[in-house]
Length: 309
Image (cartoon, rainbow, N blue to C red; front, side, top):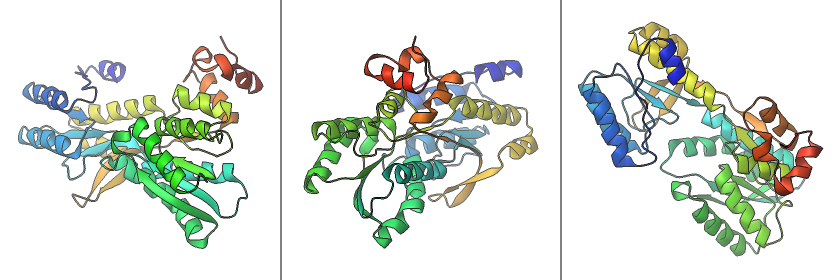
């Protein structure tokens, strides 16, 4: 982002609240006080995002929601990934890893109910899996959201559901790599790791290592650099008053069900990552072999022609 703004001769102020809602508001207030040309925010909650957007609107400062939309908000634009498609990729990956297992029992460990992205991931998963649940081709044991995406809570909830189901599970939809890791930890205790396909998302180093080990079936890679560059291009157009150019960039729409409006959006694509495609992230410089190929993962890296270092 900094590179893109500097290249366009626009001075950026980039701050990170590090998950602290009060700090998020404080940073936004300071930027509004400085009368920035455009405010790009990643809301930690709908209420926090809306409060900031109301202040920005009163100061005639346009707002871009970055990575997640503020439900019930007033942002002029949104930049993020097509979260419904991400959920579809997760479901497709699970179905591929399951193979032919009629009546396979599935547990879904979903993200935070307060995160609209999590809702959209679930929507995408359901678009692929609901018909199979309805037909009996698969059996949904339970779909469980996890507050604040907390892995430790995800592990606790997953183990409880698994025990209540007599220790039986054939596949797990885990909404991101953190929750997938929590699920895999429980499966290891039950001697089921590597036998039960588990999905993930974010292509974290831990997630990719789990995929290489065979403990995790797939992850989903979302190119953050592309997202940052798209947000910068959009913000530059808005800052220059080129709203026609901004609209040309925001070719998609994301529905805000609370405000009952479509938010002009730049929606980016994601990529399904399996064991045999992890190497592409290494060759593209997304992850370093030295991070990935340590310890017990080294043999899997060698088998996939990923050089450790």
